[in-house]
Length: 246
Image 1 (tube, rainbow, N blue to C red):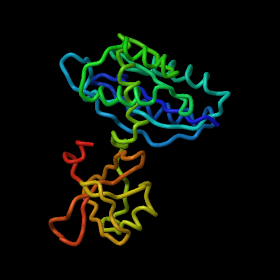
Image 2: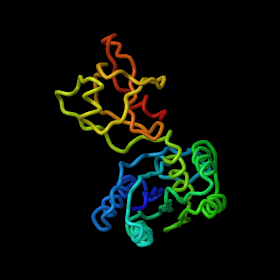
Image 3: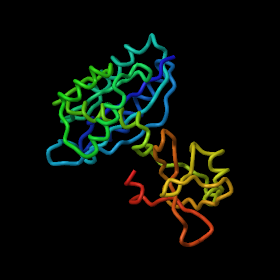
């Protein structure tokens, strides 16, 4: 089996479903058609600037997978065709596929991802880095500008400290007040940390309010929490606005 990172960007327009929807389709197809195993998708917020064409948020979608090595080229071909077939009119889709243990220039790749969150980058530098790093990078419509975000998303996922996991944590109503120990055993979460980065203890109590979002920190799925002002002995998940800093 071969571990891969797959990222797509700029596949939508203001009227269509978002890039995350297409990433879920691709993830599903890799599993059902090619027998692979994939992980949850992370959303990586990139730089928002008048110099960068984007639809609504300028975010790339990335996931990891394990596939049969013999299927790798076919999966890349299929992913490209999927983007060309299903991307929205007026979009500029890009695809990046990296084999985890064959990536050269890892630090440059991670730095490119970080730069893409705060700078305007260009296609030429993206193609140059992809070639040096031994990574597949391809355009699939429009200007192909989505290759910049696709490459950046792989760099950010590889770095392990940027991004929010797509979707919301689906918790049972009777688990709205729950211990860290139970939360980690019953739900798809690796750690619970406070906003300063400190891990909580297993018997700490958390109040789960409204919609719950997890983030990528140190390569792990983390639920960030803050002190619960309504209960000084407990903790509460961050609000929708507070989670945006991740």
